[in-house]
Each structure stands twice: as C-alpha cells, then as structure tokens.
Length: 352
Image (tube, rainbow, N blue to C red; front, top):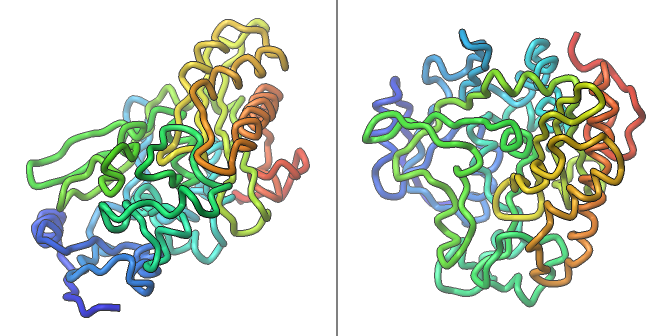
C-alpha cells in the first residue's frame, strides 16, 4: 500500500474541496476501497474520511411519501429498519443477500453504489485491464469469462457491476443526490453507472470531488410493496456475488398487471433496467406465458462476451421466477436465505 495523506473534514464543502485534488478518494466504510488499496489496484495519495460528516446517516420519510436515505446509512441498518423493510421489501432482501453480516454492518449506502467490479483481471495487476489501466487491453476477453457481461459490453471491457442493492433501486426509479464543486444535482440511479464503450475507466457520472450524499425513492415506489421480490443466483448461497439477479415489482388490480418494474444484475457493467419487459407486462394477465414473453423482451440484444451464453437463458429463467414470486405476493417474513431460489416461502423475522 502506498503512502497517503489522511483528512477528516468537518463539513460537506470541506470534503468536496479536499477530494477535488488529483489522487484523492473518499473513505466511508472502506469495505471495497481498502481491499483495492492493499492489492495496489487503487493507489490514492489522499484519503478523505467522510464517516463523521453530519446529516448523512439518516433515513427520512419525505412529505410526498418518498424516502431519503443518507449516503452514510449502513447497509444492515437500512435492511433492518422496520418501516423501510415494509415499504421496500425487495431492497431489504437484496441488501440481506449481499456479502456477510459483518460487512453489511460496515458498508454504506453510498459506497455500495460505487463499488468496483469483481472481475478477476481487474484485481490482478499483472493482467491487462482497460478499466484499471486504460489502453492496456482486456485479458478477460480470452480468459475465464463465464461470469462476465452479456448486455452492454464492448471489446474494451466485459466486466459486470457487482451490487445487489442497486438492482431494485434501478427498478424502483431511485434518484441519487450529488454534491460537487458546482453545487448539488440529481441523477437517476439508472444513469449513474456508465457502460464501458471505449472508456471503461469512466464508469460513473461522477466528476472529481463529487460526493453522493443521499439516495431518494419516490412515493410511487411504495405502491409495489405487496408484489415485489429480489432473486439472486450465485455459485454459493453464502457471501457470493450474483451470477444473475432480478428485481421484480408489480401492481395487480382486477386480475391484470397495471404496472411492472424489472431490473437485472450480473449481466452488464450497470444495473440493467428492462423497460421493454415492463411494457410487455403492462395490462397482461399474470401468467407464465406473460412472464416468458417479458423475459424474452428483456434479453433482446444480449450476446455472449465469452464462455457465458448460458447467462442469457439463465437470466430469462430468473426473470420468470422473480415475476412469479412477485405476483404471488411479498411474504410477511424475509426468507431465511434472502433472495435465494432455494429459500422456503417463509423464514426468520429480520425486523423485530
């Protein structure tokens, strides 16, 4: 690990000023950044510790019925918040399916959004990686790539975004609040992350010094609470990233789907909002036929980036299963194995 300066600012303005310098990085929970530093994948010359900035660790219900989640709220605290888990159950389930309990206790909302890909070639400094070192190539293209992208990838990068939390956020129209050198702005979570194109190192809409201060969910997101699920297929149920995941949310009235929200994880360099599938579901009768039609629409344009053609069919199957579970109704209890296809219908109460 290289030597670095350590700064603990007292205000958001001070933090932005300190982090705007070349080589600076924000430090919150550190569950991803510190690993990157130890492996010399990231070598910041200045760490700006934002853990004690005031007002960023709150969960607030807004006057219009939406909710605002401060960037320093811990993943575990959000997942176990009684009101939040009731109103946004797919998000709570996604959070509880990620990492280990110890990491969830440390990881923050803002940091989760910006965590780096888990591509093995990104983490191996001896490998060519355009994302880590632009212009060097992508060893994943001819390497072990069965877990890589099938949507939105380019010849320059085929990595996937690892977050579980971001997938239902994208489905439910979350908005990210950002403070920067030019003031405050808002970005739809769906557009926060960038597809690789020719510049995979530019993986988000953030500029130098930009600080995520909150994530906001609109009041309309609450309307799906009775019919929403997050489903995640992984190589082991404990402490593993998604091979493919899906967040599905429906509103159903008079035997018809009146609105649908669907997003995928593990298939692209960003959470993948499947708007074509949502349109296919609107007005349909809840049925396997409707879900299969939506699944096909969601994967139009998907192509293997290597030895991963299976992920296209797997994603379609996960969509069908997630929609079926959502239509059956959100369970009163989060499953004992959150988001796992091997979960029973009920599980341990996670909100006391």
